[in-house]
Amino acid sequence: MEKTLENGLKALDIQLTESQKQTLCAFGRAVIRQNDVMNLTAITEETQVAWLHLLDSLTVTKAAELKGKLIDVGCGAGFPGVPLAVACPQLDVTLLDSLGKRVHWLEEILPALGIRANCITARAEEAVAERREQFDFATSRAVARLNILLELTAPYVKVGGAVLAMKGSAAREELAECKNAIVKLGLKLEEIKEFSIDGASHAVIVLRKVAPTPKAYPRRYAKIKQNPL
Image 1: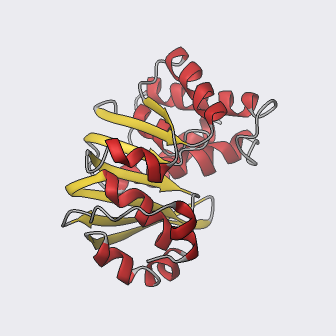
Image 2 (image 1 turned 120 degrees about the vertical axis):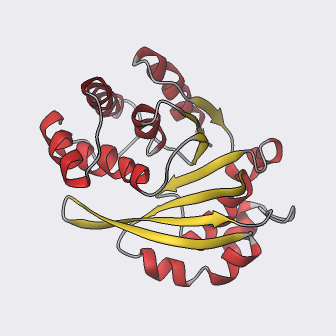
């Protein structure tokens, strides 16, 4: 895992300290171990964890100057939020997921590894009521198609901040579905940062928050899914 991480960091031109690299690998191995008793990820081989979890998460650091407060919506096993908390110690990271077992595990393992993050168990469309437009960044990975994801993430971001949506090879196709949603939610496309992760195409779509998101959003998830903006 260490060698793959080192090579990937060089390829992505990301500089980390030895301590940060060790912490990332320690978390990666903790995910693999926990996966024996809890369904966290289908990716359990060390090299693949390094590429598809750790390095993929760190591409977000190349898409924006991360400072202030970031929320990872639907964090799952902690990606990308935990690697971002390790790589950007100045960043105040909040991990949000609806599955209590996963969040409880993160609450236990992160302090043991010396990683700081706030952990919240809640549905994204419900937790926003107390956290509307309080974050500089919202990010998410593998949660939903972009036209659904934006309604779940944009309300968390303050004007001037950005949604950093992680997507694969279908990034531009999903973006084309979102023109209406982008305008309605107070966003504006800034850029698409594309990366090669273990030979596959990955992207971070940067959408700047240019106006407050109307209070009507987000709707209930069933409504969002049934009728995306």
